[in-house]
Amino acid sequence: MALEFVNDAISLSGLTGSRLKCEVIGQYYPFWWNITSGGPRANHQWPTAIVELDAATGEVYIEETNETILGSSGHALNLKCSSQNTQNLKVVLIERDADCYKHLKQVMAKRWGNIDIGLAEGLKTNNRSNIYMLNAELEDAVNTIDKLNLGNALFFFDPLRSTEYQTIEKVASKRIKTYYKKGTEFIIFVFTSDWFLGRDDFSGLPITVDGTVWSAEQRRTVSEADALFGDKEWHELILRDDPIDVRENSLIELYRDRLHRWFRYILPMPFNPKEKQIFHLILCSNFEIGVRATRNFYCGITHNLEYAPDNTIAFNKFKTLHPVVFQGLGRNKRPTQWRILWCTITGHEEGICDYLCSDVADIEPNEAKRQESLEWLETEGYIEQQNSVAAWKLPIKQYKLNWPKIKDKLGIDPPPALKPLSLKPLSLKEISQ
Image 1 (tube, rainbow, N blue to C red):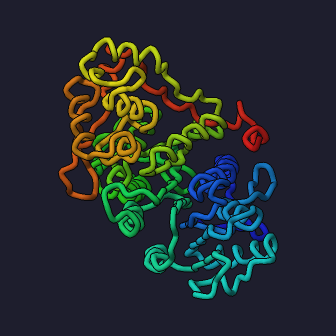
Image 2 (cartoon, rainbow, N blue to C red):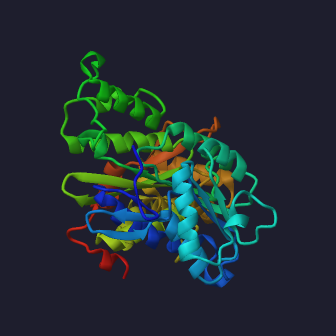
């Protein structure tokens, strides 16, 4: 894809979703930083980092509206330079394209003249600004930034087309050394509908696995999708003549499965900036509270209802069904089994849990007792064991909520599917409020 610029802004002609995406990211970065830095109580002192792996120029020109807005890297810099107590926030900007990188420096000089760009380039040891820039291929940059003490880090993958799965693996393996270790989050931008509708010189995927009938353009798209997934196992489920929305859902679910190799919780947030166009911002995290807060953030800007099942009704049904687990407890105490079940229902994306989940560990410090409680919940049908795809080959049992049983026993429905944010029902002015 040939890059075009208007002044210093990268021109994304026809990409209506870019405006919406940039506005949402501009709201999300301060939200994320406020949580992961420790917030006002800790005076935002905890080390944090926003790593832009496709930084572009910091500005985006939207041809349809003839306006220049901040891109995601521009929002990261704006947070760093315009907020208080951000001294321990690192902003790392990686851009491989020389023209983009040149314009990025010009945008920084124009908008944030107090940044010493010469000092920011590279990883200089005397750089106290905590702003770093690298004009390098992603693989080289990942090896380089590994030297930085990033602290709690958010990596944003914002490609012009798609992110290869081997890149996901490269970054994740550098950061997540042990079983679903916290402290690293990814946001991955996916042009979901483009894979099926195509765009400009990019052909949509074929509707058959028979490669002999693919056009040359379709072959290139299939090859890119192979790189996106990291294998060819997706062919049978997506290269078929199903309705486009069905194939879009299949693509996101299959991609989510791949990402579970490194992250326990995957939250795809859909956006619908214009008719038939769908893209997703996919949050990948191992921190339950952060994922729940992000889901609530998304619900707030999209007018989706926050998930809030009735605790009192469900608890009373649980107590009636399982009086034995209440024996010996004080009058107002609730059994560990219930507390683990409830935190999984209300706080674990996709209802995934294991004995190493941090909120489960907060409920019951003893590892053996935590596992016993999970096995009790499995015996009673509330959860069921699933095959783990985690990168670490460890004998850790992972479970998932059994929603039909939960509905039957406790009368609780699963969270509804998220309705996408659209430009039509929700103005960007509303987003910023």
